[in-house]
Each structure stands twice: as structure tokens, then as C-alpha cells.
Amino acid sequence: MKIQITESLYKNVDDYFNQLLLKEDAIPEKVLEHCKNRNIPAINVAPNQGKLLHMLVRMNAARRVLEIGTLGAYSTVWMGLALPANGHLVTLDFDENYIKVARESLSIAGLQDKVEIRPGVAVDTLAQMLQDKEAPFDFIFIDADKENNPVYLQYALQLSRPGTVIVADNVVRQAKILDDSGKADNIRGLRQFFEDMAANPRLTVTAFQTLGSKGWDGLAIAIVNQ
Image (tube, rainbow, N blue to C red; front, side):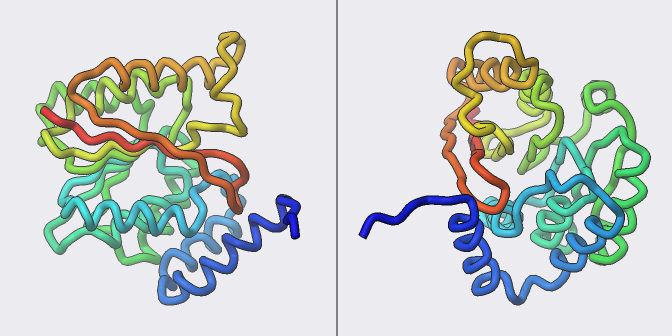
């Protein structure tokens, strides 16, 4: 029997995985509900993708994590909960409302002492971090304005070390990544981001599509070689 793939079907698959495999992850669930109640746009990672970030941080034994794009701190919480006792996460956002809700989310998760929110335009904050000779990060998650992904990548490389893992979200965008017309700033930024990664000998890179509760999208994952 041929199965017709529909939006409700692949969302139901995500629900199945989340109910079965994330039932012990009560803290992120509380944070997600808090973000919904505070009317934060529902553009956060899906729960199973949040747990993937959590597991990647643990697999890399990361102690220092950088996140570009905080929103309501849902992904922040997933990664923060993966950190060891001496771990530290720095997350960047410019929107005062998002930052206020994010601080509340961190309080719900008990991560106030491990997570530092740095307000301001991310490019300016990253430049200041370099000027201040910030220690390198073990794991970097890029999930902000896609047109600036090439710039974020350059800063990420300067704030990394050999073995640093760099993850970028929303890189497929319902196959719009294939549009080479250059009309959309976000797609142009993503395509330049991929071209820059592919041409950089310091990076080993892959990307894959995802289909689930957040629709048709995907992730890029890179490891810094040297």
C-alpha cells in the first residue's frame, strides 16, 4: 500500500518520537510552554531537534557553548542542560522582549548561573568578543537572521578551536536553498554560507533535510579541523 505523505502524517511521526523518547525531559517542556504563553514566535527548534543539540553538546564534551539567536531560550535550555558543572553558555540576541522571556526561561530551568545572555546586534557583540580575546568555544549554534550566516561563520571560525562543532538551523527552507536568483536576502546568505564552508579547508561539513513538526527544513553540521 502506497502511503501518502501529508503534513499531519509527518507531524504525527514527530509526536510519536517526542512522546516516547522525550517523556523524561520535563524542563524543556516547561520552557516551551512558557514561551508559548509569552507569545514568542513558534520558530524555535522542534523538541526532538532540541534534544539532538543536547546530545551533540554532550558527545563533544563541550564546556563552552556559543549560541547566535536566543529567542525565548528554548534551544538555549536544551544545550545548557547538557553542560557539565563548570560549563558556560553565551547566547546573543538584540530583541529586548525575547531577552526578557529568555531570562525567565533560564530561571525555570535553573540555568541562570551557567548561561549568559549578551544583548545587542550579534555582529557587534561577536566583534567585541574577538577584541576582548574571548576563549574559544567547543560548540557553536547559529540560528539567527540567515542573510548574516556568512558573517556569523567567519566569527565562529575565529572563536573556535580544532574539534569545535558548528551547527546551523533552517538551511533548507522548503527547498528554497535551491533558488540561485539572489532575490531573497536570507537564501542568498544561506547559499554563500554553504559555499564558504565548502571552500574552507578548515572545515568538514555535511547537511541534511528534516521533515517534521517544523515543516520541511534542515541542519548543517561542521567540525573545525585545524
